[in-house]
Amino acid sequence: MPKTISFTQQVKEEIVSNEYKSIDRLKALLSAYVRINGRLGLHQRESAILLYTENAKIAKFLYTSFSKTFDVPAHIDYEQKPNLKKKTLYEIVIEEKADEILSNLSIDFFETKITHKTIKNDDMISGYLAGAFLASGSVNSPLTSNYHLEFTLNDENYAKWFLHLFSRYRNTNIQPRVIKRRDKFVVYFKKSDQIAEFLVMIGAVNSCMEFENIRIDRDFTNTANRLANFDTANMKKTVAAAQKQVQQIEMIDQIMGISNIANSKMRTLCELRLEYESASLNELAELMSERLEVEITRSNVAHIFNSIENLYFKVTK
Image (cartoon, rainbow, N blue to C red):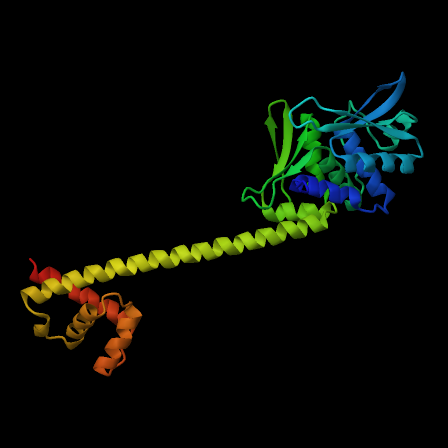
């Protein structure tokens, strides 16, 4: 039985399956990933860029992208975490030209500002956001009604600079917020239309289509349910009103006899209500029009029932 993947994983795997013809967009993506989910360390006594992921496809993408973009050898180490799920942690190691690559990607692990060189235009901003999502992003499944997309970041100032990326991007309605969650800073937004827009922005077009299709189906179902609830409520209200009218008319009949009501329309409506206890006002209007051979409207029926109620209060005093 094939293992199902989360919607977050689906989005990330779509990002790394894309072809990046723009080197600037790809470098922006790599810059964000390294800044958020990498570090500069030592590997066999040499300075090296160390990147981490639990996704094999992301690991392969990073390995290939760094090797081709910077013409440097890279290799992948992995270890299985000693927990119940036994997840595999992949470590991508770039040993050569580490400082040069960090400079080329405008990365300084001690600097919280995102440099303009990395995000000069919308294409580069999109790439940067895609890399950030690969590194620390998550999005709820569209099958849930709780729409939520977030990035988990380590530094408050960096999180604030990260927020500015959305305002720099032209023609976008995405308005994220930032909150502190334990020792992390979370940039998030919850509106479904903004999530869909973001998925397109980062190149996850197929995931966006799935997200929108599920959302439309749910909205349709919710609308149908609301209409059904509305109809049920109206029906209950109509039945309750009809029962009340029948009780009042029966009391009037006991006290004075409905045949003695002088007003022909009131008398006819009393007779019809006793005969058709579940009929709606529209149906009673049609029946009265046919019996009296004059046009009676729904509003006429409602007005006559008010007169019948007044008569009930008068005779039961």
